[in-house]
View 1 (cartoon, helix red, strand yellow):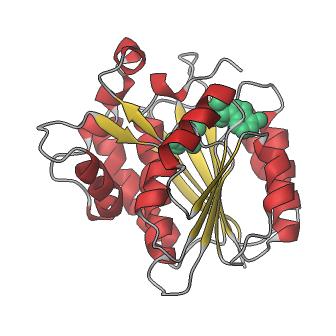
View 2 (cartoon, protein in one colour; view 1 turned 90 degrees about the vertical axis):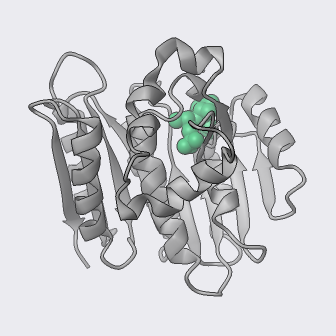
View 3 (cartoon, helix red, strand yellow; view 1 turned 30 degrees about the vertical axis):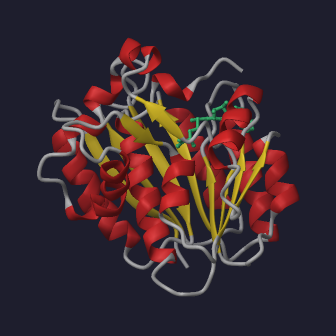
Length: 278
Ligand SMILES: C[S@@+](CC[C@H](N)C(=O)[O-])C[C@H]1O[C@@H](n2cnc3c(N)ncnc32)[C@H](O)[C@@H]1O
């Protein structure tokens, strides 16, 4: 387990994922009914952009720092959390990971389950959120947790699966994990994140999802470069199952705007499609 999110916090991929996450949380919170959120690969929750790790890559400079000026309206719930964490600072220093966004965009009646396998990160999570009585932290494998913790109580909510893609078969694990989770909690909203380094593994992943029996699947991608560029991380995508109403339209607009800020190079692209309809 070498992956440490502190090096990548606030980068373009975080902006895409966290903006979408905040929109889904805002949608769930629009009704008084309580909901539950399960974050299977939670990280540590909050990141210091002035720390050595973030400064070493500087990725946040091409991410969060580029979307603060006259932001798109759909970024509002996400940027509200960034602003709250950085009140009084001219530029953000503390960046919210998924647990922080979840904790801040839920209400007292909601429930939060955070899973993180790395022992140090799990301890940091327990330290950061231990006093929040809505939160339970599990230091275990995220895919095992999917089987153990679903369906959630209350039986309404979101499952975020955001693995580090350190192992060769992560796409297969993701597809299998979603299938198993969906059998236990078919009405939940699922958000899965994936990197785009080449098209073939992504196409195979999409084909596997499309052949299964889960319906209402949207995919939303932002490509910084053509998807087979040898550069490495050429873009990222989200799979959303049971998306909120008009989510695909909102993501098309939002990713178009993010592309203009984060990926102005030739060859960049946005792709939003209904992979499996109703
Ligand atoms: C991409 S980061 C998560 C970022 C976080 N979701 C966010 O948006 O702020 C992936 C995390 O998964 C953790 N991890 C790696 N393998 C795992 C596993 N099998 N189960 C749970 N967590 C795992 C890593 O330690 C890392 O913190």
